[in-house]
Length: 417
Image (cartoon, rainbow, N blue to C red; front, side, top):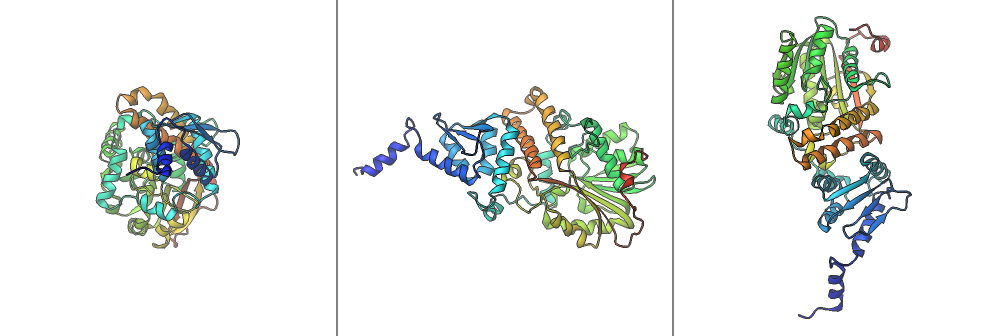
């Protein structure tokens, strides 16, 4: 069959040695849908497309047509994959570029290539059932304690630090975070505390050593529990801290305080009322509780690349969604604090240490892994500095508990330790 003139024209456009006018047009359209962030896109043939918004903060260099097409179809997923694989490179400050894109897309929310309803289907989190939660946690936390030791603080705190002064180091800020939590709970010697999701065990040890509490800490990460038990034994606190390798839904006993730092992100909103019932069952009538969690101002799905490659099963709730935990079980919320910029600074410290340990991490994992985690840490910084993510600490108790502080003065004294 003889080709028509139109067929010849289309074929010639997609020859690899010709400037790709259609790709450039599509990229300009894509930049417009993203709100025209001031960046430059460099295509694989050397042609460049820039936003009219002003001086570019950086360049995104795309190495081939396959990567380009994937980015056009689903940028939220394939940007991360392409960067990890090295088929997309960023020239300039990675954090500044991600911040620029985040601010721009937030300003045109709902006008993107994919609607949020479609994104909810594409990036549906993995289930957080008893079995699903264990699998999700294993993928992120059980990749090696030595890896995390290279860039976390010496207490192995993998949650937002609290920088009580501008000059505080990461180590000092993580200790301040633990003190901040303990003071909010008004821990006293002899208090029985249950912790849901204890990480590498640092907070439980801190509550026992410095506040005289007796702690039961639940965690489903096998590697973290083994590490925490070894630490408790080495520090002579195994009689005061018990680490239990089990799901928060299996918590039993009655306690003066409930605390969860950095676990709610892995629970999922479908299980918030269930969590509330667990807390109601285990807290004494005058018990106090604190939940510390990454959150959002507006409900939306987690970034699909983060959910698939880094944090399976994760969901960051709004304060309204968090209320399902407390309202369903009749708790009274006493205090809400947002530590958003503290988390941005924490992540900055982590990323600096991560980059400093590049060679050692390279001996453990391949370059794709390193690039993935660099993007994850840098992207998280951008999400907090631009307000896409928040960090909520919520303190609560039963509605009949009248043993309440009259002010917040107890939070800002040094008398607890």
